[in-house]
Length: 418
Image 1 (cartoon, rainbow, N blue to C red):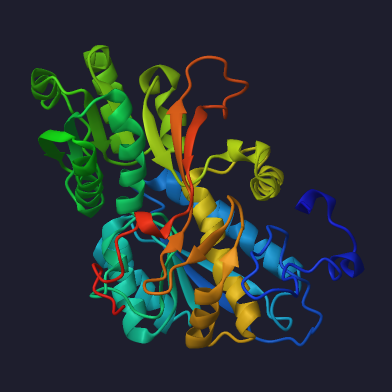
Image 2: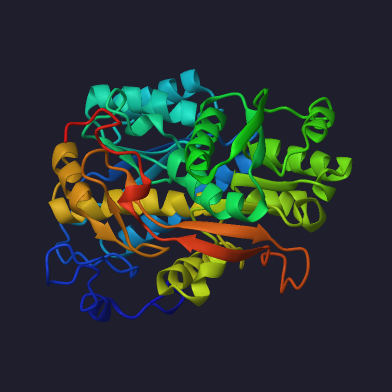
């Protein structure tokens, strides 16, 4: 059921999201169950720090748009005992210190119940440090390996996004056997880039891959011309661009203009929908990468179609991006756990989230018990330059790696007790 054809409340109340049945049955992508109890109370407040300005602003703004849909669904279904949800969005400016400050304000001044957000490996760790100390749930919607490690983790820490280990591993397992094993990395010099390289190298070791160089550049770099002759001289089979947002757009464009594609295949761990739209078909032609979500999944997955339709209705026919979808899932998971726990108490909501098996928009997911990492599929996509039906038809899905705990680092390796 989509929001564009919403039946009367009496009908909705008979179509409850949670089906009584076997424990652990996967939740559907239908809107939240109507909550019959209409007692009024203070709103449930969700803080949402994300970099609305800076190099990742396009992705962050899409996170907010999608998160607002989860809030709308929840409120239209009656909220929790009549309590509606408010989303308090704050600009963390892609700065760890700013992210910590905004998070502290959200908790201490705005009295939020939960935090969802982030779009950087560094900012999410600073957000988590604040929420962990104050025992407030934080559901991170950006890639990080460190947030799952015992030293940074707490029972209130959840990670809705993929992490670099699983993302890079999936792309390596697809690309290295196909395109060659002599690898150069062009890496944004911060946690995201470093963790992605580590994930590629770890998967590549089992595949016989060799690292020729790991060339690092500053976050927000505009000019890659100094790196390209060195890369070309190394004669790699594959150039892996371990960067994000505008950095990815600029490096792909300049590598294409330099002519690297004539001898080298370009891949990236996260091939962003927003970056592909910004960079264009010619620059991204033939680039392969991983993603957590692509709207084109709707042809096979009903939950994707339902989510896309709600987003289209809210945003003049636009489709959600990969990181946008994480904004929806991150908020929706917390709110579903509130309904399951029948309280907004963080510890009880955490326990309910940890038990969830869900399908909000991309297929079945669940949180791993030891670290609250969302176990989910990884899509491998290739950028299209021909045969596009419209401006949004930018990728072919060439493979899907199914959800598999075995592809994650083990709980013991992360420092959690067995």
